[in-house]
Image 1 (cartoon, protein in one colour):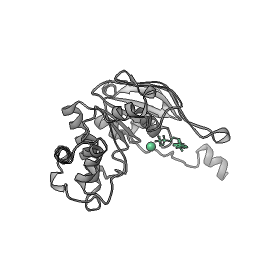
Image 2: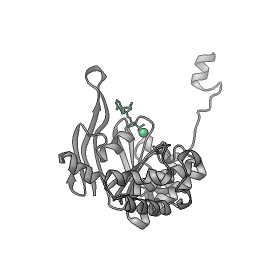
Image 3: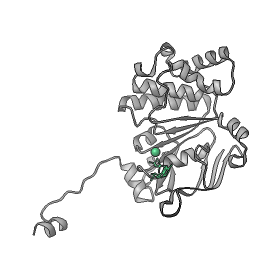
Image 4: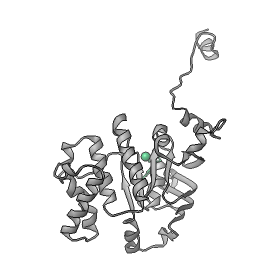
Length: 265
Ligand SMILES: Nc1ncnc2c1ncn2[C@@H]1O[C@H](COP(=O)(O)OP(=O)(O)O)[C@@H](O)[C@H]1O
Ligand SMILES: [Mg+2]
C-alpha cells in the first residue's frame, strides 16, 4: 500500500550538494509494522519524511494506496496527510497547552467543531490510558507519558498510516517497552500500517514484521524478522549482521596484535 519508487532526496547545491536518500525502492504492506534501521546520518528520517512529503523527494515516486502524492496540489495533499500520522523522538508537544489541547490541535486544523474535537481527543487519550492526564501540561508528564500523548495526537485524525521517527530514543528501556506495546496494540486493533525508524535493533526485534537496513542513503538489504529464527539465517550485508548482533564488540589488543607490535616495538 505504500510504494516508493526510485526515491532520491538531495539537499543543497553545487559544492554543498548532498544526497541523503539514493534511489530507494520500498514496498510496505498494508497493516504491517515495517522497521527502518541504520546508523545516525544514514538517511532514515529523510526517507520517513519522504512518505508524507514533509520532505519532498528530488525525484522518484511516492504512492500511498495507489495515489501519487507528488502529483497532488496543496489542498489534495493536505487531505491525504490526514491519513498519515507522525510521532517524533522529542515528542514535539506544545508546552503551553494541556495534553488534551495538544491532541485536539490537528482536528482544529481540520476544522472539526469544538465539542466533537474535545470528545475525539479524550477518546484518543483513553487509547493510550491517559484519560486522567487530559488537563496536565507536558512539563508535568514523564517521557513515556509525553510520547503516549503524541501517539494520541497522531491517532486522533484516524490515520491509516503511522510514521514513527525514533519513538523510543529519548526514553529509558522500561518505557521503551511500554511505548512499543502501545504501538503494537494500535497496529493490531486498528490495523494502522506502522513504520518505525530507529538505530536500535532491539526495537525492531520487539515489534517489526520486516526491516529495511539503510546505509549512506541506500537501502542495502531487507529481511522479515521471522527469518532471524530460521537456523542458519544471516543478513547479507556486514552492517545487517552488525545490527542484529546487538553486542558492543571491542577488538582485543595485546602485544602480539599486529597493530600493537608495530606501535610499541
Ligand atoms: N535539511 C537538510 N539540509 C541539509 N542536509 C540535511 C538535511 N536534512 C538531513 N540532511 C543530511 O542528510 C543526512 C541524512 O540525515 P537523516 O535523514 O536525518 O539521517 P538519520 O535519520 O538516519 O540520522 C545527514 O548527513 C544530514 O546531515
Ligand atoms: Mg533521524
